[in-house]
Image (cartoon, rainbow, N blue to C red; front, top):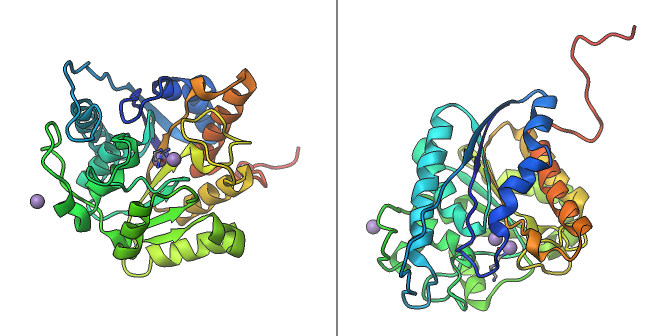
Amino acid sequence: HCVGIIGAPFSKGQQRDGVQRGADLIRAAGLVQKLKGQGCVVKDYGNLIFEDIPNDEPIGRLKTPRAVGRANELLAGAVLKIKSDGNTCVMLGGDHSLAIGSISGHAASRHELSVLWVDAHADINTPLTTPTGNIHGQPLSYLIHELHSKIPIIPHFSWLKPCVAAKDIVYIGLRDVDPEEHYILKHLGIKMFSMTEVDRLGIAKVMEQTCDHMFSKVKKPIHLSFDIDALDPSVSPATGTPAAGGLTYREGIYITEHICQTGLLSAVDMVEVNPKQGKTEDEIKSTVNAAVDLILSCFGRVREGSHEPDYQIP
Ligand SMILES: N/C(=N\O)NCCC[NH3+]
Ligand SMILES: [Mn+2]
Ligand SMILES: [Mn+2]
Ligand SMILES: [Mn+2]
């Protein structure tokens, strides 16, 4: 596996300080060394630098829209570069509004994508349905062709074109969905495995059916957008919008092990780790370590272990 890492220390898709520190915490936990240790070729492209945008007044309900638009324009360019260098891209957030740039940049390089959105939340409010104006609850609405007519013109978003078809999106982990989002999911017929389906089917069947859906027509590169709050708060408490009844550590690892073995993983987002939302150091560690382990499983780590092909017992 050739892996390109980009840090996006960005928090203005939501209101809680601290999420901008996620990228460097994940690095400090040894991500690069651990990926190299399991045989990956790793290039760390560093952190994006997001210039402050003064007077970023709300537009309608949208909060800090110019900062979010500009940050994602930068991120899209960085992801395109990482992809054109031949890597699988790992974007370390930062809040989930960054998926706008990550998926846009990925689509600019690989065109048609399957998007696997692992999250407690649907993140598909439009600028007109959002209850809070926080853009980290809206990223998919900007990216989906079928919702294009529902997105007004927004300063610093003129670079953005929709790039994903509703049929190419699969959700796993939903358990906190707004009514307007639920209508959109049903109206567009988007494939979803809420926590109800995870409980009913078990994660193995969920992944089997996820892949059946994604590969039903043409096999496309996979963009995995993983919001750490998909995991149960007992595993990943240090995040901005925890929701009870989430994925176990084991279910999260099963998802990433399974996606790895498809051989189609092309980009990963790991977002919403917020150290300031952890009550203790241990809570922060548990959250960061889960994020690291999920990424390692995206790139070949398996729980049964592994050995060098030419190993022989001495
Ligand atoms: N973590 C969040 N999205 O994944 N929060 C925003 C959406 C809350 N409805
Ligand atoms: Mn999210
Ligand atoms: Mn979430
Ligand atoms: Mn248009």
